[in-house]
Length: 107
Length: 252
Image 1 (tube, helix red, strand yellow):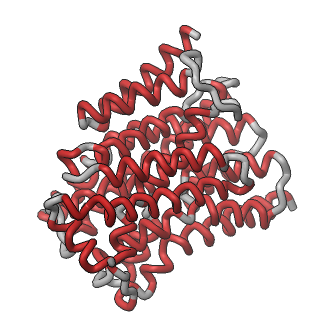
Image 2: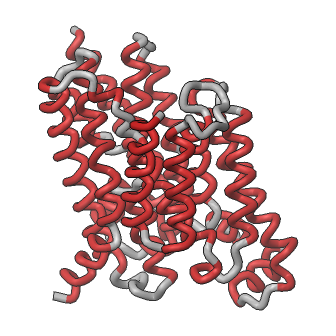
Image 3: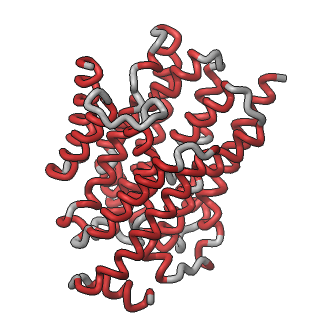
């Protein structure tokens, strides 16, 4: 019974996730995007991704933590600066992760 | 041969995010195990659902015994952003046969979109051949996600307490690596609207973080998109950028 419940969870999550990703592709040749939608879509990645990570960075414990004792803030800040200056994704990720763990170690 | 090269191009531009994804996959596998879920469940979820952040949210809901419909509807909201990616990709794939569209739909995640989408802008790939680059990117992310989930499942049994290591920071760093190129004048030529989108989405996400089912995330994302577009219309008039000008002319 419990197994059946977990199968249902996976099937349901698959259906919903795949449905979202595929629905516009199903009749792709009939989809016409208005120009303003095309223009707005360019802002999707930056808006969505920052909305996902900003609460993790500034509220690691559910409260706003603007302090140097917050490894999430330190690591993300370092990654952000490296990303802006160096334009190198791998370097951004590695330096950010190192900064995160160093400040976790020290704090 | 040309197709193999395109696949390689897709894989190469995915490498940094693959590095960032591995700890995240390991965390998922080990979290599932340390919370008493079975290994087949973690592995089946990674291979069929293939959606990192939704899988984590679902895991959290399962642990508090949330009903099925809550798990499914939350998945829907968390993944709704992929609809926006699909809307942006549709112009590049509309001519492809259905099996390609099924495949690209299944593999359309934050990372594959972020790895392949800029290649169209840089003219490294075109509408005719870009799907091979996407295939290469998708396959490498898929393989990475399955393998790292399995490693997490095994490690989660051997090493208790792994979930407290902060491995999810790898995802934060990966997403920062995706975001920062938009904020650089060299890449897009016109950065003010992207900064506006970043700042507005960030503020709203902090204010609304308490909303249930990640609704705050969705609101923040929509605000960011709207602000970015409005700033483009407002400020873009003085910028000698062909794309922006075309946008303003047709958009207003």
